[in-house]
Image 1: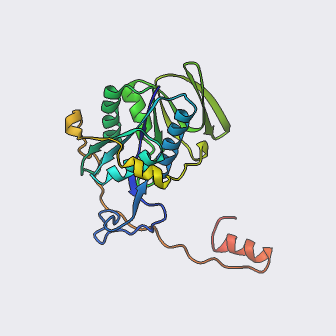
Image 2 (image 1 turned 120 degrees about the vertical axis):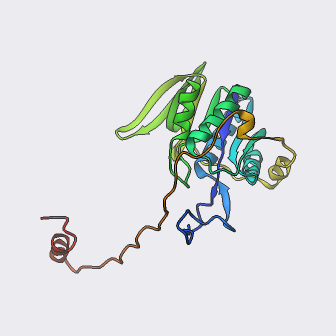
Image 3 (image 1 turned 60 degrees about the vertical axis):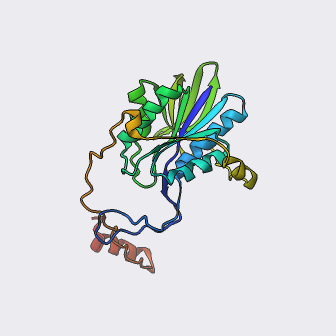
Length: 250
């Protein structure tokens, strides 16, 4: 079995986001970047499939600028076998990413594609679903547990009413939720080994994909700052403020 995972280079989740002065977006210059946390979960799940003997090869794919190869190297250090970088300086939207992954899947013929359920920079949560539609494959979104039975992939996913388990025929696209696993840290020996692993480079044009953005960002602004809270002395004061100031009760 061949598994393909998608990884995205995003602003590190520990960094405080700053909006550009012209409100055209967020500041990314001289800002620490790292792998999207949900994609780390996807890589970890792929590694576990390899370690259990279910998967034979794990390929990490990223769509983005040349610096995205650092993100792929992180995946290789975690345990992926090789990487593919679809290099572009365009800010690729979810549909463009899905089209690139579709073209890669047509070449590589994976049995399972695992992607994070969303990226923490745009929170679109669309790529996996779009990719499934383009490929015509089964999909299991927001997966919190995976298990294989012959050619059937059982996916436990979180829904509003609790947990739902669905059975998918391979090939399939999976999007990962937080509770699926705990990603490992890359050890120093594995980081050194990752430098010798192969990263193939291509472009959207080579794949026959147009990644021209379809959306235009008009402006990006910071959310209004929350007012400091107030301590009340008793329930009567609380009720009075909720009724007369917050207007949340009648």
